[in-house]
Length: 166
Image 1 (tube, one colour):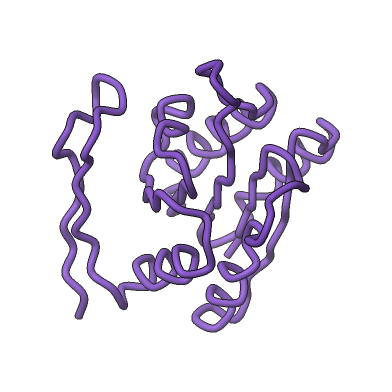
Image 2: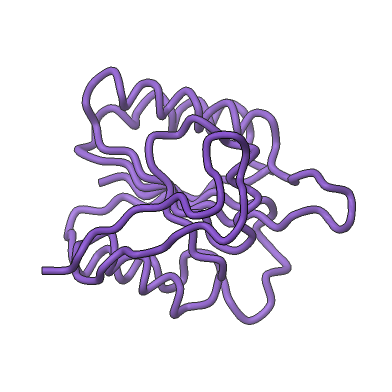
């Protein structure tokens, strides 16, 4: 499995570091996880290398840690990263590879990366949210969330997924 941690900036996260809990939780359940972190500071050549090699994995999980830019209504994620995620998602769809994006924190970030095959919104970046997201992905925890807000035309209030835990 490829776990791609996408962060707007690799520093300034305060008490919770992106993927600090998510990666160990993934590795407890799936022993062959390759974890890569990319950010707005990652050279385009490295971003392209990640995209080109992603098809070699059985599945791709993207952890998206992006803070909304203060009071300006835009997202501080580089255009190269957004384009890479969209290309990776299309590529995964073409080969039948599972591709899941977990949005940590502000759910409105999802409106900037539309058309990804599946998204799990956590509304938080804390360790508990990271651990809970892995448990949901692994089928250990039910997924019962419904959007309390509208996230673009395709995702109205009440949109969501219900999957019971075994």
